[in-house]
Image 1 (cartoon, rainbow, N blue to C red):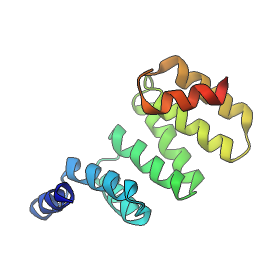
Image 2: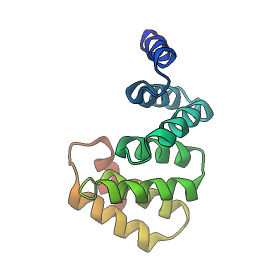
Image 3: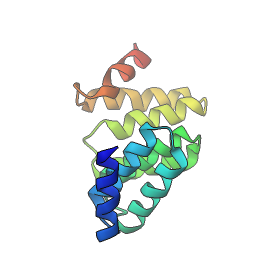
Image 4: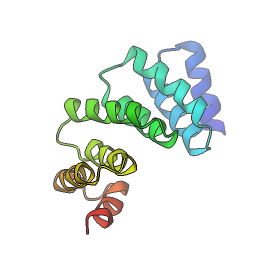
Length: 131
């Protein structure tokens, strides 16, 4: 895609370009190229370990790769970075559900619903998991 090409050119000019790395990781993830997405997100985290979006995106990629322990660590880091955003709790709940720890899954889902934002794409799925 044109966007992908432009972000790749941005990385050629400045390899630590946070925005380009985020979007390239998202594009690769959405295209199903999870290992390539993980390369971008790992590089992003190397230089921006406290960047909330990088932690969540890397967590989602690891979750999709079934690297549940790595994903959980990233979502927990997301909780510590921005504790008032429900997305970290939602995805932590997904990990706990995969690990069959349903009580922790429910606890995280409930916290995610409490925090929102309600217009987020994950919110409806979270609601359906709880109710």
